[in-house]
Each structure stands twice: as structure tokens, then as C-alpha cells.
Image 1 (tube, rainbow, N blue to C red):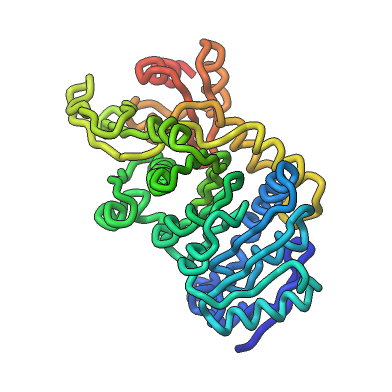
Image 2 (cartoon, rainbow, N blue to C red):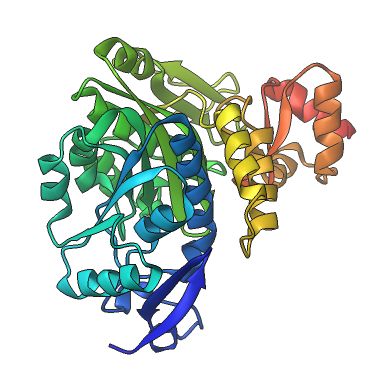
Amino acid sequence: MHTQFITEGTTKLEVPELEHFRTRAGDYAPSLAPVFYNPHMELCRDISVSAVQVLADELDGIRVCDPLAGVGVRGLRYAKEVQGVAKVIANDRSREASELTKRNIELNGLASLVEVRNEDANVLLWENRGRFNYVDLDPFGSPAPFVDAACAALARRGMLAITATDTAPLSGTHVKACLRRYGARPLKTEYCHELGIRILVGFVQRVAGKHGLALAPVLAHATRHYFRIYLRARRGPSFADELLAQQGYVSHCSACGRRKFIQGAAVGLPSSCECGNEFIHAGPLWLGRLIDLAFVHAVAGDLAKRNFKFGQQELVFLARCAEEADGPPTFYDMHELAKRAGASPPKIIGLIGKLRGRGYFASRTHFLGTGFRTNAPMDEIVKIFKSA
């Protein structure tokens, strides 16, 4: 295996030589490498470092598990760049990956903090029930096969972070695959990525409920080819019940763009919209908040102190997440509204200003550059849209 040396954050890494894994389109295909490393996830990993620092500031001597480590980049960055990490387990069932992780540990002088394991991820997590304050599931593809064991491995106080790169099933392109993996029906709409994240959160919460574990999202985002969620753990059946009560369904009208939110597990869903067309439904999924403002502000505060390559971009991104934190589920797309209203789309900032001026919540969204989030009724949105 040809390798090269890079630096991410303040962590030095030996990784597969990236030029050997370029696609015809010129992008990298890390799945083709003998040991997995994706350079495009650096922004995500930077945010994760600050998220773990926020958690470490709250707790005393946190234990971290990276059960699908690849070259070990996440676990090593947590060990080197986060103050308050007592132990990191970096695991990969690939012997080649484990050997490369060991070399990276030596490269950074982290032998006292990081332990390398070469096991099946689920076996490792089940063997360590209740031992980790932070578990980071970052698989290639779906995280679904690892969620049950990850919930078992979480300590009473902690956090579960999950990456999903199977965005096509979650976003409605492959409905049957989503039903098989996550037990929920997706929809292909303008806000399908948000629905995908809500399906993922809902699935994880239902699995966690079996363990008497409540997992409340504090940050969730869709970036490039992946979804990323951070869920704060709290043990107790009553806490789990409170969160599960906030799951339900989204009913969407493809004709006029209206949507309804119905909370509950076994509920009757509306069949037709007030415009006369039939609703289509997504769920079950999480209908509560995706973003905790205090957590995001704390993460941004930590990021601002660091000298990351993409630091300014990351701060702008987190500011957009914070802006939409108090908004309702789902958002609207300017172009879709323009088609339905038969009018040219106005400036999005002007539209948001008018919605706020009439007392409604309104913000942009990180999910889509032409998207905006509001609690205004559809008729009011169209009226303001046409007059803006």
C-alpha cells in the first residue's frame, strides 16, 4: 500500500496515497483504498472535535470509542486535540487498518491515551456496555447495523454521534431500502434531506428506547454526501418516553406544497389536502428540534479558538444552523414556490424580512441555499411571496 503523510487539525496522519484512488470525475473514492480515509470529511471532523470538547468540559475524564476507525483519524484527533479525554478505543476489524492506526499513534505520541483493537465493531461495543461517554459511528454506508450495540455501550451521561452516507434511501430515492433499514417511509420532496435526517434520528431513538435510553439531538446537518447527527444521552424509561412522544409523520401535498405534522405512533393520517389533492406521507420520524442552541453556540465558541483550515467556513455553517434552530419542521424552496405561484422568486432575504415583520418565524436553512423555514400558513407565504 502506497501511503502519504498529511496533517488534519494538529494531528499528523499516514494515510493511503490519495492520487491512487481518483475517479474519472477527478474526485476521490476512499472506498477503493485498502484502508478507509475520506479527505472530504475534514470539516465534519473539525466540528466533531469541538463537539467532543464541549462534552469533555461538562464531564470529567471522558472515554471515547471509535469502533469503525479506518486510519484512526477521528479517535486520534479526539485524543490529541481535546482536553479531558481519558481514553480512546480505536477499532477496526481490518488488520491493515489497525496496523496503520498504530503507526499514527506513534506518530503523534498517543500510546498512553489510545488503545487499538482489531474486532468486529458490534462485538466490541456489546463487550463494553455502559463504558463510553462518546461513541462515534462513522461507517461507509448505513449506520443501522451498529446502533443497537452503540446504545448499549453508552454511559449514563454521554453522547452518540452518527454519520450516514446512504442518503439516497433516507431521502426517498430507494424507498424499500429505507423501509428495510430504518423502518420508515421517506419522501422525495424539496426538503427530502431534512426528512432523511429526521428518519435517522427517529430510528436511533426507537432503538435506544429498548435500552431505557433517551437520545435527544443537539446538532444535525446534511453536508455534501452525508448526514451527521449528535445525540445527547439520558438514561431512564420516562425520558425515553418523552422523546418517543415527539415522533410522528409528515403529510405532504405535491400539488400545493402544504404539509401537516401528526404526532403519535398509531395515528390516523389525513388522506387529502384542503386544495383537494391527496397527501403522501413520510415516517415515522422525529418531529422535535434538531438543534440545541446552547450546544451549537458552545461548539462554535470552541471552534473559534482553533486554527482549523476550514475554520471560518465552519463558523458560518454553524451560524446558519443556529439561525434555523427555533423553526418548525421542514422548509420551503424558493424555486418550487415560484412554480406554484406562477411568479418570479423574490430576494430570499426580503421575503424572510416580510415574514418576520408579520410576526412569523422565518430563517434560511443550511439544507438548501434557496430554502427558508417559517411557521406562516401556506396562503400567507404565497401572498407575501407574490408581493415581495
